[in-house]
Length: 156
View 1 (cartoon, rainbow, N blue to C red):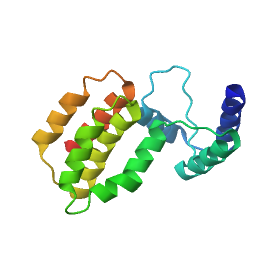
View 2 (cartoon, helix red, strand yellow; view 1 turned 180 degrees about the vertical axis):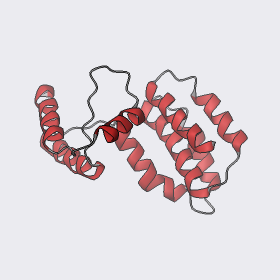
View 3 (tube, rainbow, N blue to C red; view 1 turned 180 degrees about the horizontal axis):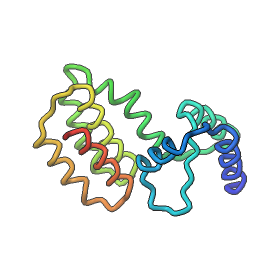
View 4 (cartoon, one colour; view 1 turned 60 degrees about the vertical axis):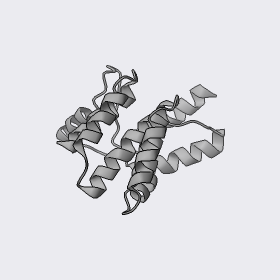
């Protein structure tokens, strides 16, 4: 079944990829920053990928998380809610709890929530952010470190 899913994903990505210029491809690879020499990016639209993932999910009855699902949910749903005026304490409680979870994606979600909070508020306590990053940097996963990098870019 896994081979069928992988083949469907590859076929979909190839058949629905955007026609990118060399400059666009170069910029995309810099942003994605993959250290995998076999990594291929097709330049598909996020909304199309989300729709395709839902179709795959139904067809194969999948149940797992990815960085894309995590980030999209945090940026589009939970982050804006927590970024509303009056939710500052709830945000801090959520970040504190989620940053300690065993599940990689929940820990990454805490970074993305903080990032979205900073994007919405445009004002933040830099000491709090750096203390939070110090706690998170101890985790070994690349997706946590990439989330930290993304967060620190916003803080500058």
